[in-house]
Amino acid sequence: MIAHYCPQKHSQEAVAAWLEFKSPWAAKDYMTGMRNFTAMKTMQIISKLREMDAKSKGLDNPNTPPGELMKELIFYILH
Figure 1 (tube, rainbow, N blue to C red):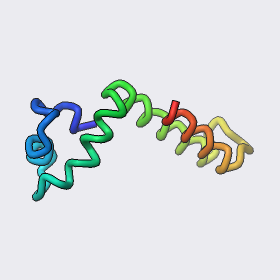
Figure 2: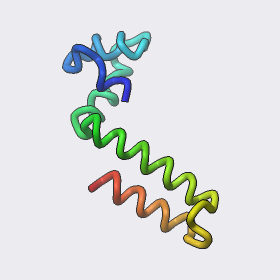
Figure 3: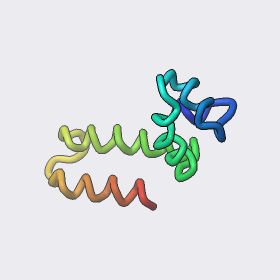
C-alpha cells in the first residue's frame, strides 16, 4: 500500500528509494503489484485479510473450515 503513494510510481529506482530498499531490483515485485491492483483494491484486500483472520479465529464464524475461508479469500483477491 505504501508503494502506491510514491510520487514517481513508474521508476523502479524511485519506488525502491521510497520503500527504503538497498537495491532497485527489490521493487520489481511491488511495481508488478501496483500494475495489477489499484490502491483502492489493495485496501479492500487488506480489509478482507483482516476479516478472514477474524473468521479463522472463530469471530462470526463458528464452523467454516479454514480451507473454505482460504478459497473465499483467493477468489476475492483474483476477482
